[in-house]
Image 1: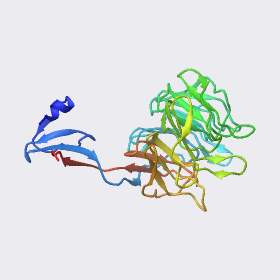
Image 2: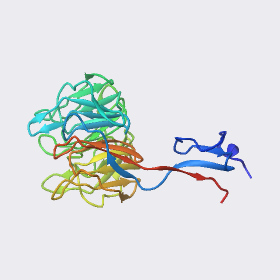
Image 3: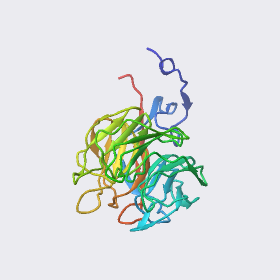
Image 4: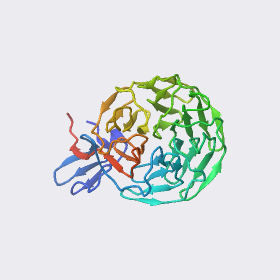
Length: 326
């Protein structure tokens, strides 16, 4: 029978016991038990409380990971916006450099140390783009459209995708692609919609547009669309029409949490596998216009309306198992 080393091309560590903090997918030989072992994500994920934001806000931007998150600008009350940027280290938020123009309902892409925001509401819809280097924000090239309540994907500062949203007049189906220095038009959404709240879910060539609201009093939408770098096609529809939720992950592994509509702020969370949705555990603080970042095994949501500083972390437990020939 072929050995693990022959199959995978990697050597297996020979240890006297299981490692204290194995990485997902790590393989080792436990000499005490005489077993080949592997760590793997298992069990149902759950939400738990994280450190509170310093500035309560909603319709804010978010980027990064569960242990290196970024909260950007947002609305603190009707007619009032904040320039505050905060960084999360896995347990608490600290203040960093302010954005140049306080805004909310913007598009976001990037990481805690290299982020991008564009468009959104600054008293009116704006085309302004700003770039973050981990401490300060600087002006970038303006977008082609001035929109608010738009969706975004990308994950990096040099390759972003922004789509949909409200413009004057009407609702947009437009997509714009960022190459690190300028914006160009991409393929239009199949259905124009706005309040596609939340942030990074996918890349510029594998984007994800979830829910939102359709124009003309059409209400919330269950539509999901996937982008391949040039055009949008239908994905697996949401089980319930909604918008204004936190959104993070990738095109084939995404989570949404909170949002609306409903008689009150939503506490539901759901996971997408590229074709279908499954219901996850509920968040503790119901809220809409909430932001998030991370992955389906280690996520983060923060802020939201009613105006809150609440942060919640989503974690899937990692366990270990023996590798057998059966």
